[in-house]
Image (spheres, rainbow, N blue to C red):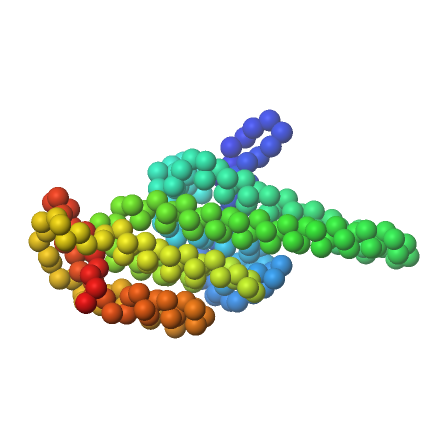
Length: 273
């Protein structure tokens, strides 16, 4: 299909292509979403029996680019999805994600063979222990690949597109898109990467448009206390610890948000009351 590029000795893009096909089939048959757990990773998926981890990652990619673009490339074997993803991230990051999804497929195929090798009767204890150790290693490998790839999808897109967020509408769209990404992530115990990343991006938006009293500006009020409301949402949503709460409260709760025209560009800024 659309993402497989034939090369001697390898088929890069097989994992991405297979996941795209499964997602398209699940969407066409109106499969319901359900919460499942694989390799200590909790995900919400409508493909629980077919490549659920790979589908979760490709679904994240489709979210930032567009599901219709993904399905178009899958059906018509074109490069639209790949090219659009690269245009908003980078070529290096796209092919790294693609390779990681292929590695997930390979690791899970190896796990199936390892489990099958334990089905024989009368196996020696040393052999069973050796295979069990290999299984544990491959399981941990799958988990690490998934989390690393998920972080790359998140950061490659949102680190780049935050540079384009200048107008009020663009900033609001950026905030909403990053916030809703939480519905697609695979979660593990003690992994707070998304929550911390979201908080850091909200702080970066505020710092990016700092108010400079020495420059002549035209102030345009836009939703007072906008940032304060987002801070509260983060605290409620992710249950940040007291250290974060105290720091956020002391730094931001007594501020208001507005935009200024500076050098003919509308910029988001904050100012202490």
